[in-house]
Length: 239
Image (cartoon, rainbow, N blue to C red; front, side, top):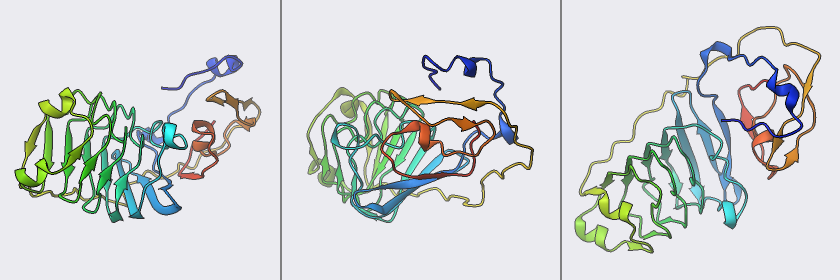
């Protein structure tokens, strides 16, 4: 959903065109504690893949605005040698349904997976030893946690908050986790069509106006979705 702030009245009269029937626009960006040590990629089918090594950046009250708040995705897959899930990284991710936590993840930081209203299942390996506050509060549909270890290993995990959602979920022990394959070629192509000239739009995000953008110009969605200055590469977006 896009909120149109005061001062953008002309946008209300604009014609919105959805090009090529694209539901998800594949994007990529950085989310590592050191920037490019961890990158993320969004695919057409709504899968968000996070890959790299080392620590993920912290977001929200602990850092910059999370890049994932304004993206619609259904599945998260953490792969590679990533050691944690950053604070507030997946806070308020409404459309998220499945979360595959990587094999090397040891810590799920505070508010990392929080208020994800449609999250149904989490897949977790034995390397996880700490789950931060406030657990999985707000993930009211979470019913299944698939865990690769034993019940004894599970009970050794430090959980800083035992909320109702945590207790209501069924933990499946000794589960053989199979991460779904991603078709990296399954991305929409940019249509070859004229780009109109003339009008300019000025969009607002978090109280700050962007520069005016000519209609039809290819832009980075991140320009309007965040003010932290980090780059994101989108296949296309039209204002």
